[in-house]
Structure formats: structure tokens, C-alpha cells
Image (cartoon, rainbow, N blue to C red; front, side, top):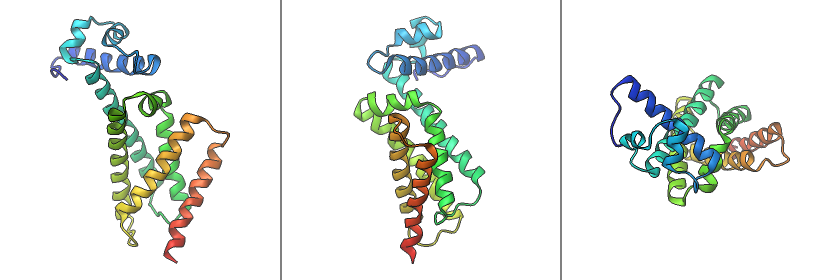
Length: 198
């Protein structure tokens, strides 16, 4: 951002601009996204917008950063609510997959923009930031749960990459696979972690 708003009214305007940017990005797509459209949606003058956001790229970056944080926060809350983590328990993998699915489904329109419309460099940066945050959360949970076989970070990477990529395609492509069937497949996948130890 060009400057940080100090007064409550300015902070409220900046929040309105960011929310408007998210709406315009989902509604119009990345190619048609402009600062003028965002200013119109937020009901502010372009000059007011430019006081805080110098260009389209800055606005998109702020929207992506917030979206990534929201998803990882939702996953963390779901993991915390699921109780003790045991990656050898298919029910735990099901809970992790369900948490990620729910987080991705919460804003499928923005997910589509991130995965299918943003330039590759911007897409990869947003995707990598999300993967890293969720993977670090899961690695901490695995370590806290006393997972001693193998490397918890390696296991977290495999789980997050497998679940994330399939979950994203399921949300975006809407295949003829029910949510329960998909979660059952993730649970079956988890059986491989337990089998590897025997």
C-alpha cells in the first residue's frame, strides 16, 4: 500500500476498497479488472483509491494475501476443532481434507481466478504462500501429536499437496463425485501411511 490509513474513516474506506476489489476480480475476471471499476464498486473517487493503492497489481496482491490468510485460518480452526491428530487414522485425514475443502469452497469464485486467470508468476506466489502456511500448520500438529516415524514435515508436504491439488480440481471442475465419496478416497489414501510402517 502507498500509505497506511490512520483515522477510522480512512481505514473503513480502505476496507471498502479491498472488498470492492475482491468483488470486481471475481465478477469481471483478472483481464477486465481495473482500478476505475474498483473505485466505482467502492463508491470512492479514483483519486481516493490511488492515495492508498498505486495500481491494479497492488490491489490484487492485497486481495490474494487476505484470501490466503482466510483459507489457512479456516483450516487451522477446523484442525483444532477436530482434536488430536493421528495421520495413521483415516478419520484424521478425512477431517484435514474436509477442512481444506470447506475453506476452498467458501470462495470458489476467487479460487478460480487464482488458479486459472492470474498470470503464472502471481498465481504461483499465491498458491505457494497458501501451501506453505497450511503445510507448516499441519507439520506443527503432527509434531505435537508425537508422530515419530519419518519426517513430520515431509509427511505434511505429501498430505497437503495431494489433498490440495485434488480438492482444488474437485471444487473448480465439479466432477460427478460426491463430497462423501471424495472424502472416502482421501481416507483410503491415508491407509497407505499406516501400511508403510508395517
